[in-house]
Image (tube, rainbow, N blue to C red; front, side, top):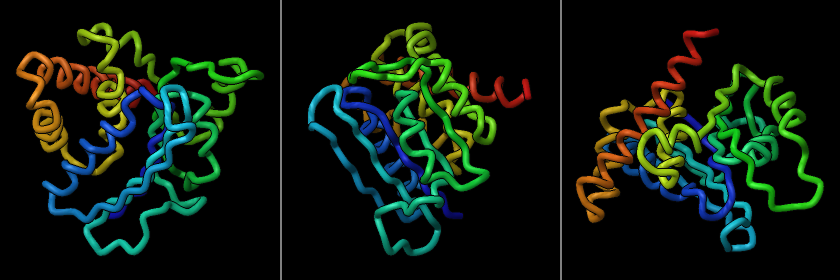
Length: 196
């Protein structure tokens, strides 16, 4: 088992929380994990990316080379486009369709979606809508993690246990809401798969 995942978004969207859940779940599954993070502008709204490499064998580098990412999990659609050169030909993109317009010349959503549709069956998620249905817009990152779960190679049970562990200090209600968001994203992704 070996998977390279690029997590992408902007500051404040919960990328590092997604990374923490996947890291914990991978370790609980007896896998090796390497992670590297890049914070652009180091503030809310600046670009954030994390390279996650997971394997059942030793990993020698934290960074993912161009053309070797199996999954791009993005919480912002333009950020998904930014990392297309990293994707293997049959790799998957799971991205939120909720744009965070933080620059001049931000392309139209139509242009972004046209580019994304050139990839291998992208999973395009209205994370804001689904997270509200799950109980809070603040859970959109867990919606996205759920949508990407079928492509991560770790069981849903272990990912949910890691969500529970990560949010344990915040109480049972917050844990339940984040698990609900995760399951909402997962159900959406499964529905997309059966629709193809």
